[in-house]
Length: 349
Ligand SMILES: Nc1ncnc2c1ncn2[C@@H]1O[C@H](COP(=O)(O)OP(=O)(O)OP(=O)(O)O)[C@@H](O)[C@H]1O
Ligand SMILES: [Mg+2]
Picture 1 (cartoon, helix red, strand yellow):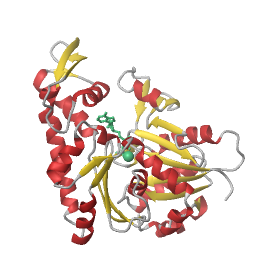
Picture 2: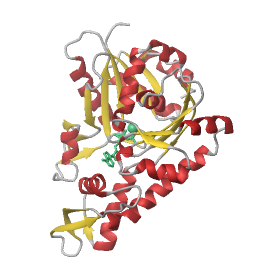
Picture 3: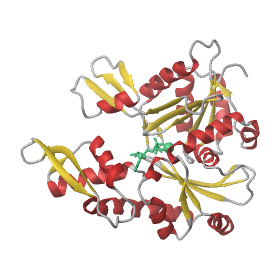
Picture 4: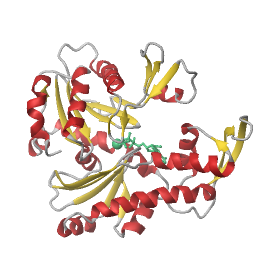
């Protein structure tokens, strides 16, 4: 197959790409800032995300992925084009792109992903179940017989999978993620303290002082926002104890959704997987004490993967380098013109 291979994890928060020689070819944010008048992009990635909520009406910021699927095709194509050409440089042949998707996307959603990567310059494209990549990325090897359970806690989605002998034996996607905690913090400060904050401040509060289990030693940060009374800037302190009930509520509802999906899994597969414990990955797994909370509520041993936010791209990197994994799972790089016909073959994912 001519052309280099590029692996893509296109999340609602992060955009990561790897090549066969570089696991971290792109480590960016899924955001584009564009001129509201012309619609032309100005910057992509982290530099665009920083502008979110900080620009006048001339510049808008968009996130192209919502709940795991492409919600803004135009900018999804543009950001992929920009990063593909950065990764490929002056190469003559078009790249072959492998991109991961949530477990239960529809055929139409798959086609939109395929269209986006091919219009962005891919010669051929290959769709892969994201949860399999995450499993390989946390070290669940493809030879392992008997299920191993993984939960990938993303920004807007949470994926659950049981992987056995290198294939996904059971899986589900919950349309809730770490972003719900940011929203809950914003709502609490507005409702209970009349303080208006933006998404960057909410994220900072989450990263610095939120926890999945109530902290024994309270911690706090000073941050700033806008008073809801006089619309003037305000500096304020927020503590871990104050926000815990709102974080707690989000985690409880996420775990109860996960629990209901686990109940649908066959008893042998579930008990087998439970014996080996659950590995948590995705950026949401960086929340303080998340494994302890999951372990307590699901009554299954839990641990957080090393570098959880990079688990999926690490698995994509392994899949790209290992033809056996591609073949075992029926994954194929297909040409754009064959997309419509071949889409039927992707019913499995
Ligand atoms: N230290 C931290 N504590 C808590 N949350 C964190 C921390 N670091 C990152 N996160 C959260 O992880 C999320 C991003 O995770 P990730 O990159 O896995 O998302 P994504 O793959 O883009 O999302 P999705 O898979 O849902 O489309 C963000 O909500 C971010 O705030
Ligand atoms: Mg993700």
